[in-house]
Amino acid sequence: MPGTTLPPVPHYEPPSVTKEDVDWAEFPLIDLSKAKTPEGRAELAPVVRDAMRTHGFLYVVNHGLTQAQTDRYFDIADMPFAQVPEEEKKQLAGKIVENGSYRGYKARRLWTIDNGVRDEIEHYNLHRPIFQQQHPKALQPFLPELRSLTEHNHYNVLFPILRMLALGLELPEETFVNLHRFEDEGETYLRYMKYFPYQTETDEARVKNVWLKGHTDIGSITILWSQPVTALQIMSPDGKWRYVKHIPNGLVVNAGDSMEMLSGGFYKATIHRVVQPPTDQRGRTRLGMFYFAIPSDDVKLVPLAESPVLQRVGITRKCADEDAPTAREWRMARTRAYGLSELQRRDDVVEEQVLNGVVLKHYN
Image (spheres, rainbow, N blue to C red):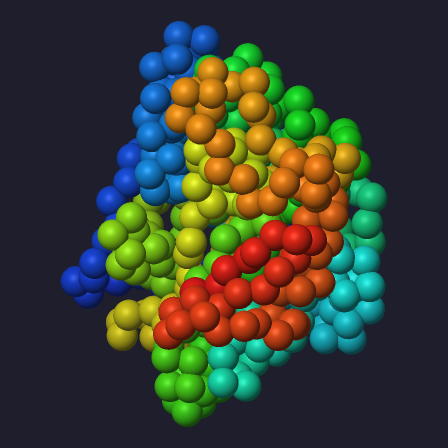
């Protein structure tokens, strides 16, 4: 963190971990400290490759921040919600429909979840340079720390993972890194996100206890800083929903649409959702801290066909190469449409929509 004297911040006290017996998802855990050397990356690359090919999810530990540093970042994460007046939030609302951008606030009850019920999710999105957008007054003393956090996410977590994913495709290590340069035009975000319980049991029943329906992420890699509220589920390879465990001072990393398209379907965009927490955590809010990495705006989302691996196993395309969107086009289309546009129901589970010629699925 920058400096030695940090401004005081109100402490956010998370709930205790659940003691209930739930069906946990099982996927690999890697020690990211090993990825500092070429030999370490070569050792971890097959594990990362297989995890992202099979599950699309990965646990990460030893990412470079202490528990105390992570706790402080979660304290700061609560400030955009607990310390900012509603009028100021409205003034800093993201231009979601106008610009296809989440920069700023996304208010509660913007999205439709199911059966006419609106979401209870609020988030605040900080564009990765941090200093290029207006922020709430309460957050301004912490901007140098938040810039440090985005750089840590980008250079010390995202880049090592991208290097190992490139090795998994037998491509040069910097292949994906070069598509995600920190200084390029793009919309990679640090996001603080707070889930509130539905206001009535009737709403909870109408959405079948789903707080955010099954979906894939827009970008290439999502980094979730693990928190103790048990609500995140992934669709396992056998088609069953299973809960993601809390790893103290750990990360949960998953692949998104852009990575699936760039890898020709080799790496899977993970289907995941958020549901009502177990009984012993019910009624508590769920505070999340994320880093959503999206390729640079001008990157065309076509398979990296030069990969020897793809040449052996084949390429699965979502659309013809000539019709493939750029990262900017895909990000804007998905941002404008999510929770705001009509979906076509295909069966009891799957709903679909077509964006930029690509079929996008949602899962109830």
